[in-house]
Picture 1 (cartoon, rainbow, N blue to C red):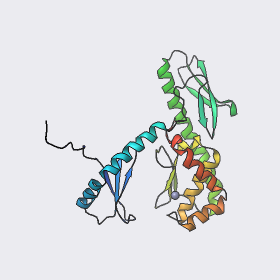
Picture 2: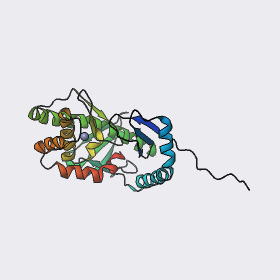
Picture 3: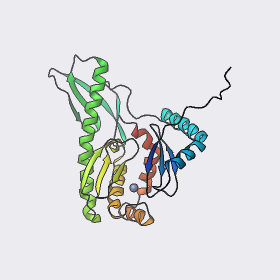
Length: 246
Ligand SMILES: [Zn+2]
């Protein structure tokens, strides 16, 4: 029998310095544990802080993993004929057609759904993965079109113009606005209702004026989208499912 106590394995965490953080805090996500600390706090103090919070961190890790496991994904398990594809807050059927050409084509036929044309002789698993890849590429292109249109609609009315727009794949945020007003938007908003996408675009445009979430910021959002609370709520409730991707 060993007299050594059973020590739990050490926790691996990444450290992020933030001048906006007043005290150190721990953020537990599915893929990482992050400590956010003010610039002046020593690494030694941070390590002591993490050690003291071990039990809390370990239970948070379990809780986050459990949540991730139980949150339903909107994506079909396999991209087969008749599979249901989330798009703009609806679900549209996938129709597969075979072509003699060695190419894959995808198009959206109004509300009738997605039609994919591809060679007949593909192995089923490979075919499903290929359709998924092509669909994601298509969604990203569509995201740029829709988001550009929304910016062109709102920016002149608000007098707030971004320097650039990047379409990103992100698992934890819908959009962001950098210090030089470069806006990033998540293409997964293509799975959300159009109003939710519009809300995120307006939200990021408002960050061009207010680089925070102050009362003035929310006032500006409300000025341009009086019913924004509804969309914000929708994203809070459904966002985790959307973020699971296609
Ligand atoms: Zn924001």
